[in-house]
Length: 115
Image (cartoon, rainbow, N blue to C red; front, side, top):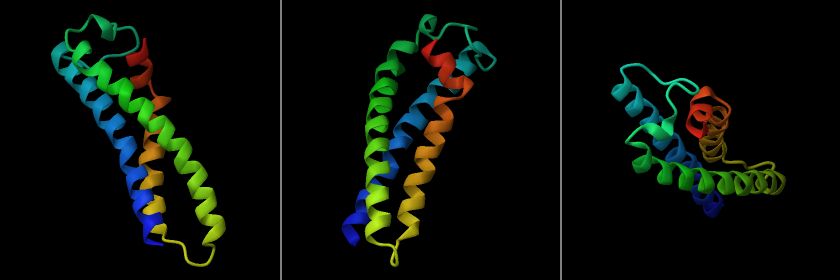
């Protein structure tokens, strides 16, 4: 039972690397520009800080994407196996990071970044 908890906590931390790195870049760009950037205003690749952030953002996006798929599969298996004794804290912890990352992927911030 404890191994499931550890796995869910590890999978719950993975999305935060993506969230923090993208939001840090977004607000750092906003600080440089004096206003928060919007789609194509300016193109993020013209900013001097883009090269500093982009590789970590893309790497953390890839790690999060694969951890999201693993999290989905393991959550389904975990809920099927442990129907009566579910540790909801670890499942919800992992769910929150993944749902915030999904919302961020479909937001204007990510749209601006991949522009």
